[in-house]
Length: 239
Ligand code: DC
Image (cartoon, rainbow, N blue to C red; front, side, top):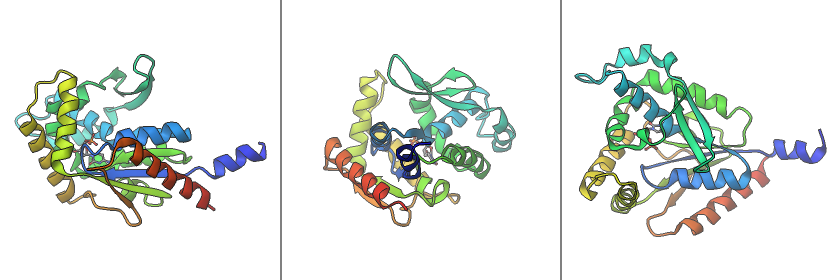
């Protein structure tokens, strides 16, 4: 292996991005991954897939059958593949493209019930750790800097006011033709904030050494430049 390539591999870092719902974590993570030539992993999509699987198999009737779902975890295969048409990563559940389905409100409303089950978390965390074995990964979620990659060289915690976040999400869903109200989106977001921050297993907290990024009033480009500089500094400082 030539020295340049060896140095490049040795200098690869792990970037963990956590934070509140609808703060633009995945947008920033994708932009960083693209710029650095790293792999991007949307860990929220994995929890959404498990929720969708439970819905498709009627495990929510009359309420979530937790043990039944846990006993099916090994039948849930989640993969990410680049979609040529949209030039973005799509999420596949047991070989079927579910990228649109997992973003719908019905899944959003049920996913935190699934994400609080310890066996589900342990199962997905194991897969996520494996994805990061060779470094060069940007992963976003709620427990990436605390549980999945506690040794990540760069940890970012993203936040913004609930109203700003709800407006962004409302605009996004409306553009996709989904029939939603601002109040409905705000309510769902506040419920998820509450669920994420108060669950007993791996609650959403600011990881030690994380850089807090409040983007209520800064634009996407400024934020990207700032995060890229953090990444470059972390790569430079890596032993
Ligand atoms: O980021 P998102 O909104 O797509 O996440 C969907 C749900 O999964 C949300 O309720 C938080 C939860 N989640 C989690 O508990 N841990 C993660 N690492 C990622 C997401």
